[in-house]
Each structure stands twice: as C-alpha cells, then as structure tokens.
Length: 324
Ligand SMILES: [Zn+2]
Image 1 (cartoon, rainbow, N blue to C red):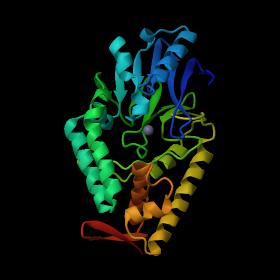
Image 2 (image 1 turned 90 degrees about the vertical axis):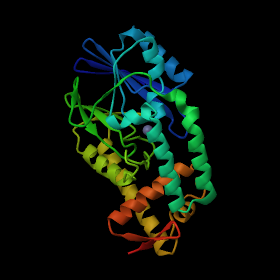
Image 3 (image 1 turned 180 degrees about the vertical axis):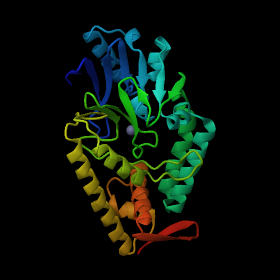
C-alpha cells in the first residue's frame, strides 16, 4: 500500500496477509511533526513484526523513533506486537477504558465472560456445540495468558482530543471500538468499524457487570454516526482503504435489514430458539464459525425484540421466540 501525505502528515501503512477472509491485517505509522505514532499493532507473529521493520527501515525510521501506540480496540489482530515493541522501547499505550480488563487479562472479568457465554449458549439452546465452545473458552483462560499486555495503558475515550485527532466511540464490532478522526485532513483510523470487502461482525459481549451488550443495535448507531463524519479516507484494519464510506455504510445497513427480515420470517414459520435459527440460516458456517454465527443471531434477535417485532418466552431454561 502506498504512502499517504496531507498537509504535513504522512501515513505509512503496514500491510500483512491475514486469514479468515480478512485478506490483510493493516496497521499504520503516522509521522506528524516530531512524533511517529503507531496506530494498532498487527498480529502477534513474525509477519507483522517483519512488516513493521520493513516499513520503518524503508523510510529511514528506527523502532526507537515510535513515540506512542494508539489502539482502536482490543482484538488480538490489532494489539499483537505491543509487548514486543514496548519490551524493547518503552512508549505510552493508549486505549479505551473497556480495553483495559481485556488487554490486562483481568482474571475476574475473563471468568465472568466465560460464565456469560455459558449462560447465553444454554439459553439459546446450543447443546453440544455451545458446551464445546465454553470448554474452548475455559482452556483459553490459561493458554492466552501470555497475551496480557505488560505496558501501562492510558485510557482515552469519546470526546477527547489526542494530537490532531478527535476520538469518537463506535461500539458494536467491539465494545471498546474507537476511531481517530483527523478533521483537518479528512482522515479516519477506524480499526474494524468498517471493512471494504466484508461486513464487520457485531460481536456479542458482556458489559463489566456481565449483562449482554446489544452489539448489533450499538453497531447500527455507530455506523449511522460514522456515515455523517466529514472524512474522505478511512484507514481500515483489514483489506483496502475506504474512500466511499457513506455508500458502503448505506449498503451495510441495508444488508442488515434484509438479514433481520429473514430471521423474522424463520421465527414466524415456527423456528423458535436462537440455535435453531442459527442452524437454518447458516447451515455451512454453523459449526466452523459457531461463536460468530451465534453472535450474529443473538444480535439480530435482540434488535428485533427491541423494535417490538418479536417477543420471547422462557421455558425450561431456554428462550423461545415468537413473531409479533
Ligand atoms: Zn476486531
């Protein structure tokens, strides 16, 4: 990806290959005045590290020139190199307050999160597939302990300014998802808020008290607010850069309405549990991408319920949905 320059600021994209249809994983070096800011930090692997080193070298920078790291959200493919960088060169790390228990791997929070998914899958009637996923989450508690960020994290949130950025909160894909908007240059660094070639998932998560966040409803609101920003270039976390964000958002919102109506139709036809809806709608992906599929269905069910289009009854530990 080429270098972008506007009004004295220069963006050096670091682009590495990524799996799961994401095409690439992107993170960015931004040179502005004396500062060299890293926005997101790739995956915790060799190719991200090499990608960073190559871009630094090619442009006559050194790791020690980085002045800070800004994180758009806590997902591992956006924070992967933070430890490796800060271990060699200590710089401030900025992230949303909701990133902190996740990035610091707060034990109590992570255990509560496993309980949250256990209850969700049980109440959605997910059976063996749900139990398998819960076992996986339990094993990850220890297995991923080495992903804990060592550096102190400085909290930043919506309404604040940092350098030439306004920080806006765009929850939905992740509860801590933020975007860095440079109004003067009409640039926006937005993590996974918007991806050009695929729909970003609104991933169901608990809040700090263990209550379900209405991810899809949040995501719709975030997309609508994002559409109204006066930016013409969105530096996305995956795939190509986005220079038509307004049209892309319209298309995404439309697609959500269609999906929502499909789900409502299934419920009208008597498919009544979250799990049954998931199996009907996602035959092929149900098993392979179970957590994402359940997230998607749960998000739509919550949104339909909030709009008064469906209702639900609790019977023998399971929610049964019906059309209104
Ligand atoms: Zn993400």
